[in-house]
Image 1 (cartoon, one colour):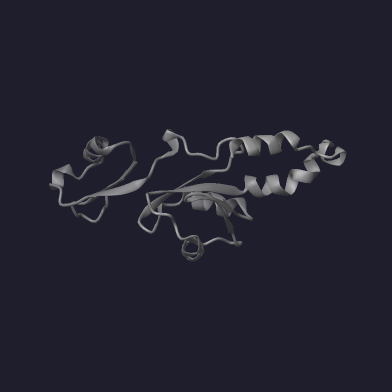
Image 2 (image 1 turned 180 degrees about the horizontal axis):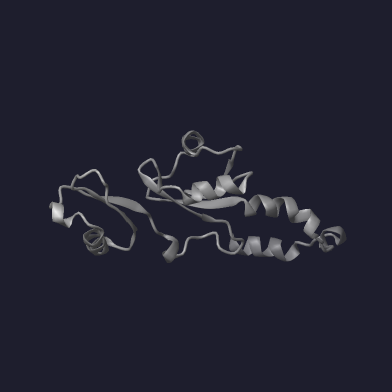
Length: 171
């Protein structure tokens, strides 16, 4: 079978018209490039294949944008999210951690040579709530120390309500 395929490929020839170079000018690719520059690449991490239609419906309901956005599948649980407005794209990117069907959805800006997520980009931001602490532990320094045991701390919020709970942002 391999030799048959090799024989066919050896006999395969392009016509003169097919061999001509194709010249793409900036004007030719500008709309596609602009669409990509306004997009995010998303990867859902888990063993389950996402239901694409379910993902579209869910994100259309929870991602509040001024203009509609489109989703293009790029492979197993990988997507391109195309926005019309930079502010919509940035608001979604800077938003909370997103999950779909029990799997985290990581997002990053589109870059033509980097559609895969590097190890440094495989980061999930979560709030850790420290509850029922002793009152003298409900200070920022204590929260930072406790949070560092769990990972990298981004922010600490100590409520001013007089309770003994602290929120730590970390990944």
